Image 1 (cartoon, one colour):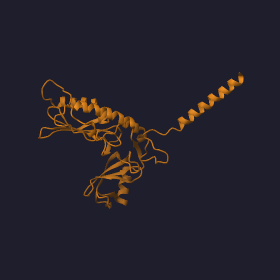
Image 2: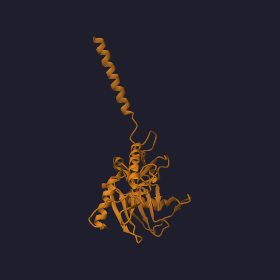
Image 3: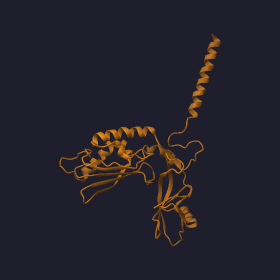
Image 4: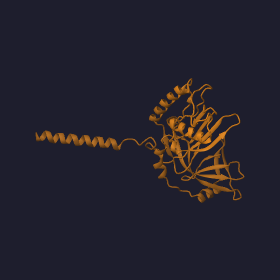
Length: 283
């Protein structure tokens, strides 16, 4: 009996060690690097759960919008946020009604937009509390536009991500909805906070003057722009520049970069990586 108990104890210990070893050897989360991948730039990868949530939201949208095919929404390949959604003319997708009058005033319109964003946050791909309304415009043709910026990090997002555009009519009908927001952005916050800036603003300016600005034009030609002392360079501040990963088609690269404003130059804005010193992008 004693021997049986000893063998049982050994078996339980071996099982525990095996489970523990498996837990240690589990791959990192979706936002972390794989084996042999560089730790920087930070990598944001696809999430199957996010795609499932988007599918459910798109099916609900198709029902509420009427004669709309959910497959026409064109979701982003990595973030799975809705890239472009334009309902048909007789769509029944409306902003929520706020106020007693037929036409909402500006305050009621903003409240209606807030409720719409909250209702469709799974489709938009952003926490409503991390979205800031930066532009509200009424066009001469009667359509109205609301533009939002996603602000989940300490530094603002730059690149073709972190934007929400809602176009609607005076009768609250949605005309266009597009989002380049980064879903579950908070999962990147810890890694972004741990980054250490190597180049201060003055270091970035000096490197640009000494080495020039290397970039590719729209045709893919590699160019180098010389920046003499007479040409002003104004560091606007640090940003998180998001760009499609060069090495992985299903991922995005997150760069901590200086946003540099240039005067009297063919380039208006340059983004210089604050860690590597490389040019991330130009505008």
